[in-house]
Image (cartoon, rainbow, N blue to C red; front, side, top):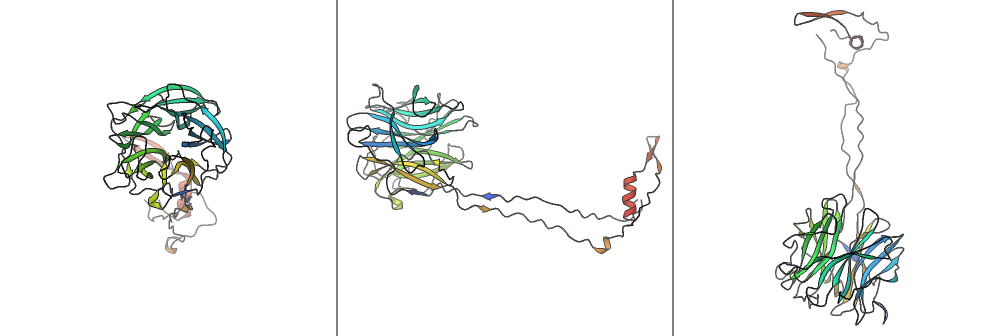
Length: 395
């Protein structure tokens, strides 16, 4: 029997690593004061309009793909290159329309496949309804493109995407199931809205029967349109940049109202919560040009900002340029406070006993352990005996 209690004070070393918390500010955007790319000179393939842009880092440089329109001709897809996303050089056309694409082709999105190839989704444009279908081409260098999937998605007269289907927002994550998410733009009952589609291979798509983002109620800034443009996933939350408009709008997008950019968020890509006000547009004091078609955001070289390109045309004009748009990724990092653990540093004197300078081991004692009528010899633990002697504790 132990006649004294032994209080052991353990010195515990706890390694606590401060966690740096970054605050994403995807909802605060700054627009360049001048375009990064303007429409071409008279006679060039993009002398009338340049729209639907997207920026990607391919082949050691930034490539901006966009749709261009030449007066009297069809929309084509070309690109410009840049080492820093500030100075851009136009390179020319990479995809021309077929005869059946009566209004041309329009750029939508590029993703990189697991095998290293690049896949470009684009719209087939037609002069009469239904106005859109979706196809894709593939490339190994981002310059030479081969049509692979033609008309993989078409408008459906019995649905809300009966005359327009715009695959502006495609999010790809090889580790997700399904790997492909599309939030697409549609036009129905004289209003723009957004639907959702998913796919395992990016070719065969399952389209939700109902839109996931609809125009706001009467009097709101997006009462006639909530049209998907770009989607990004940040810390488990999806952020959707979308176009909203406050006045009746034609299927072409022409309207006397103001196109502005808003944000909606979701954790499941089905239920979306809108920000109450737009983040880019006349409401924020920006010039009265159409804030249309922002591209999928890309991280800037220093890793501190998102960069996006949007179509910007002077109010009530049909000539558009491409304007750069920046949003901070993070604020100054704020370390999470390290938890403090208070550990006693002294032992009460009543609990201290003098440790002898020499230790005389007690002889090994053979005891008898009897259980169920069977007795076996048991040797005492010499180490335990030594500890008990140090602290002058009797067994």
